[in-house]
Length: 561
Ligand code: ADP
Ligand code: MG
Image (cartoon, rainbow, N blue to C red; front, side, top):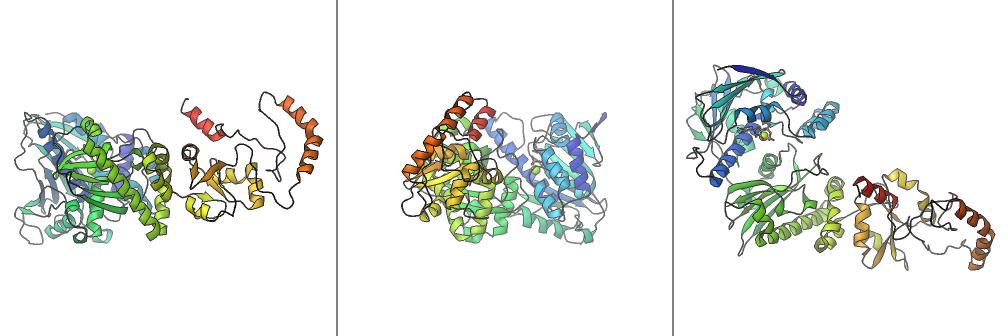
C-alpha cells in the first residue's frame, strides 16, 4: 500500500504547535477529548443503523477501550463506532473546518496568560489534537461502518501527516498515542498507569453512555487490568439533582457543549404527564464567537429514551436562546423522528414553550440571587435575548423583566425598566433612551444636552437590536419608550425656562434666520426649528417620531433593504 504525505492546513498547524508547546496546564484532558470523540462515533453509528438497517455494520457490542503498553509506552483509545472514510480522515483531522477558528487562533496567540488561552481554546473543537500534548506521535487507524477498507493516519504533529489505505482494519477508530516521557512537574503524568486512567475517566467521562473498558497488559503500577468498565454510564439528566455533584454536571456540559470552561448556570427540568421528558440545560459562561453569524449551529441534543437522536435540534428552543446547551430526553417520540417532523410536532412546540419559560425564570432567579452572575450573563447574552422582545411577544414581559440597560444614572451597573420607572419623578410619563454605537458617541451627542442639564435619566442603548425592540415594545407599565433623538420633546418646564411670551418673541426674532436656513438646507432636512433641547451645541439633527433613526437606517442598508 502506498503512503501519501500531506501538509496540515495553516490554521491546523498553528493549533498543533500550541498543543505541542502546550498552553494547558492540565494535560489529563486529552483523554476526555478522545473518549468524547469515541462516544460521538458510537452515537452516530447507532443512529446510522437506525436510519438504515441494511447498513453492514456491527452494532452488537458498542464500547470504548483503553489499552496500555508500558514497555512500548503507548496508550490506545479504541471504539467500534462509525469510523471515518479515507477522505473524511483528511478533511476532519487535517483541517479545521470551523470558520471562526482563525480569529480565535489570533486571539489565542495574543492571550497573555494560560488561563485566558485555555478559555479561548474551548471555543472550538481542538479535541483530537490535544493528543499531541502527551504524545510525540499519534497514529489513527479507522474503518467506516459499511466500508471494506480502512485508513491509517499518522503524524508527529510537525506540519505533515501521512495517509495510507489499509486492508484489514476493524470497524471504528483506534488512536494510538506514543507517549512522551512522564514529567510530573509539568503535569505530564504516566498515562500507562492504570489508576491514573481510572481516575481521569471517573473525573471527566463517568456519564458517557457507552462502556469505557480497560484492557490489556498489567499497568506498570502492578494493578491487574482485566476488561473492566470504568464509568458508571448514568444519564445525569435522569438522576435526582441532589445525587449529582456540580462537577459531574460541568463535565457533561463540556462534553456536549464542546467547551472547556465551566457553565454559568445549570437548569434541570422533569416534565411528567402525558408527554414526559427530562431536560438538562446549561448557560455557558461565555458567548461563542459566532453567536451573530447566520450559520451558527445551535440547539440542544435530543435523546429519546436515553438514545441519542440528534445534535443541534433547533426546534427545542427559540433562536434568541441559541446559546443554551444541553440535553432533552423525551419518552414518547419515535427514534426515527426527523428535523422536519420536529418542526411541526405539537408536543415539541409545547416543550419549546416550557423550556423557554424555564430558562427565562432561571435568569430571573439568577438576577435576585446573584447580581454579579446575572451581570455576567447579561453582558454575554443580553444582545441576543433582546431579539426575543421582537420575535416572541408571548414572552415579552418575562424578557423585559430580566433585561437591563446602561443608564446615564449609573456608572457601571445596568438598570431594569422597572427600576427606571420606580424612580421616575411624579408626573413624568416617558422612559427616555438614546441609541448609538457606543457609550462615548452617545454621551457626546447633542441630543443629550437638555436631558443632562435637567438630570433626566436616559437609557443608553448600544446594541443594533435595540433600535428594533424599542419600537416593537413601545411602552412599559404604561410609560412610553421615547427616543431623545426623535420628534419634538417637551421637557418639563424649569425655573429658567422661557415663558410663552418670551418663546413667541424669540420665534419672531429668529424667523428670518430659520427661513434662510430652511432654504439653504432644503434638500437635506424637512424642517428647521428652535429647540429647548440644546444647552451647548448650536444645532442638532432630529428625526421625526416615526422616522428610522440614523443607526437603524444604516443597519437596514447593511442588510440590503
Ligand atoms: P470535535 O469533536 O469538536 O468535532 P475533534 O477534533 O475532537 O473535534 O474531532 C474532529 C472530527 O473528527 C470529529 O468531529 C469527527 O468527525 C472526527 N472524529 C474524531 N474522532 C473520531 C472517532 N473516534 N470516530 C469517528 N470520527 C472521529
Ligand atoms: Mg471532539
